[in-house]
Image (cartoon, rainbow, N blue to C red; front, side):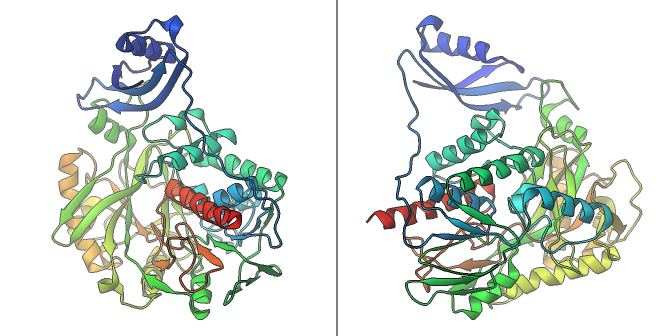
Length: 507
């Protein structure tokens, strides 16, 4: 049986959870043959008296959660090609490798070992490598974020498969049951590398510094140009949300595409202890994790919402092109940084940037260029205190909260960088949110801009069978093609596309 809403004190051990479960189920502990913690979360409704909440599977019978399996297909005349090695591409390639199809992966960026070094140079010295940055390379953009795995998608079995796979390759086992699982940037990097090694062991290949520069797919076969020319009957297009030159290539080759709504804004930083105090009623406690939050506020100028909240984290440079500043958030597994941060975003659509397929991309670029110039170059970012932002003047950055963004920040008026609609919505929302979560937007809190890459501004159209509506040998996939919005949803989409290919090959 599954038991929900088991309330226990903070720091309860698994044996204590099991004992409580047995009492509620009316079972003697020695009779229990199945015991699995399905979910663990926190009940912080009563400040200063936070409790743990569990859901468990318990039985006096052997009850096994059915695993997700994939049929074995074996080698075929043409190897499937996976373009991109972020979450969607990794899981598509992994499932195809499990099916014996020996996928060939083409990734424009660098392997993790080299990528980490290039990103460190960007963050420390302000020098960008277009092949190795926080957007391009093994693991995709998610490899330099928090490794958050919570998602609202409905495919629970596939989500479980993603979590179990991550654990198999080195992620902490707690992600299987935490309500808001996260791996952490430091742990995710090694996990991704081990998955690549397994894909290769199963017969797949992963080519780095192999940017796809052309894709001719007018018939049953497709010709992919990257570090060579490859002929195949199936291409998984898992390009990521920052592959702007690839969007141009696809458009020139007649792919059916459309622009899509996305969101832009800034990163906000608060002291983590203030967020802990607001959410838990205490600034810190040995048994409590750093508190997180998720906020939404509807204003006359549009909705404002938090995204990719990083407890105990850092604001980082996620630029992938010269002359443009892009921010993102990152936490290590321990989440032990002094500050909390989150993106504060406002939705934009064709009414804001135009109806052309790539008009959203152009909109992003304009904001990123303005931020770069305001920062003064070398990928320094424009930054402003909330109090000064609300008053509309630059002000000083001196204060209790220190900016974590590297390679550095420059005092600016973000109102002059952000679109008027976005700035106005933020000015209306921040005071309201501060009343809801004390300290959220106090005058000393920091805003750093700009955040433009929360999701893809383009969708490559596909049918129910996963195939491109214009080029049936191509399978658009993941966040870059407009079908996901985070690590978990992108990974699941990669699995779904791989399943489509496997099923088709069996028919």
